[in-house]
Length: 267
Image 1: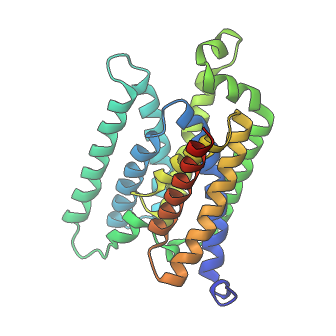
Image 2: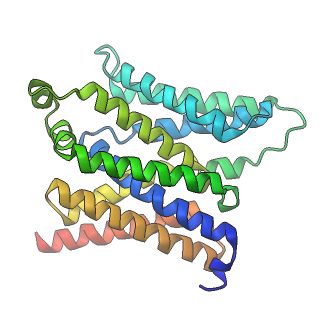
């Protein structure tokens, strides 16, 4: 363990991973309970396309991807509110289109060295100190949002029509969560990859729902599960020389299965 964290890149990966895990869990609680969890999957594919285009054009991937994914999140939000196109269909359109654009850009690039695996599955070597700073800002922002707007988030999550009737600006909160989810996906993608980052949004909440019943309990449990699963996955990936993203997802899967079995035994 001492040798493991003697490497600066491991310290950066640990810090970013913990903060992204907390953010993804808090965002995931609202998205999963509102049955909008797949938005993370659509945005991760958009991030893949943006990272690929930035690399081909010689631009900084992080600066290029962040605004594009945020705009895409608003686009999906707008489409999902369109009665002619359901939310899952809008996400499917975004996912397929983004993957196609990213793949096409990579295939047409000439003389550009692109590590496709790092985009798809993540790489702890790609995490820099800027990611640490941005993750800390994001974590602080979403924690403050839950602290000062907890009751509004609770109302919107379980009964959006009631929230509107009592004067809560649900559209504003939808936009805020969409933007936060975008930043979580972009920052987390560098660590876990575009194919796996959405699992960090979904798994902790599903696990917490098997262990807790109240909204507050689910949120707190999801944060604990997400952070613990990431730390265990990071350590195992270092010891076993396995991809970090895949290892973290497997740990989350195992924890979910255990939680489901515990719930089944209790019931």
